Image (cartoon, rainbow, N blue to C red; front, side, top):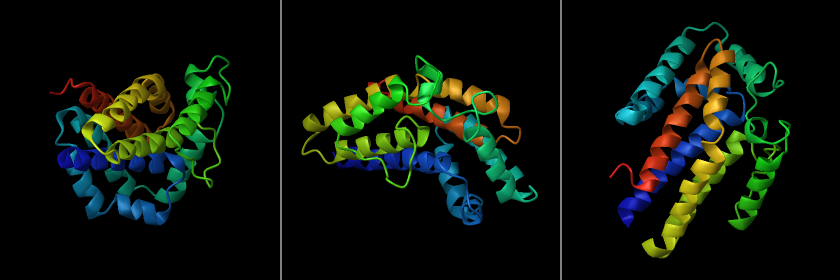
Length: 217
């Protein structure tokens, strides 16, 4: 049980990391952290998993290019705004409703479904992050909390339904739109930092789904 708890904590941390990366523009301090030894070590470890090697290498390549990018913080902030804070015609908006909603507008059924799930599991969206519930950062934060909820159960038997809920969430609320979102980022992110991050996210979700379904055993 303890081994599973430790592994789950690592899974949750990755979801929370990617959530924070896609939630807001990076500051100078954030960028310095991304270019530092701790992040290098983290990504090196992540890249040892065969399914993640290529997307991790692409993200590390983007970081190397960021090191020599002039006005890196301002330019990366402009990339963030152009992708995630613009319009569906010019950007790659990070809301499930845009990709799998019936209207193609914000706050469609995916946002309502997310709100229902959050109420069901008593997981609250951060008040300071005033975005629709189907924003990618909200969904990834929810997934991290759902993982920790499984850890807080009294036994593996009681944790199992929450683990199953994680698999269902990946399949029905993440992988139903994230690959299309990633392609949109690829086509519109000329520098490639955020496109690489979202491609890594998709690869990790697929790997995590395989773990939860037992395919990696």
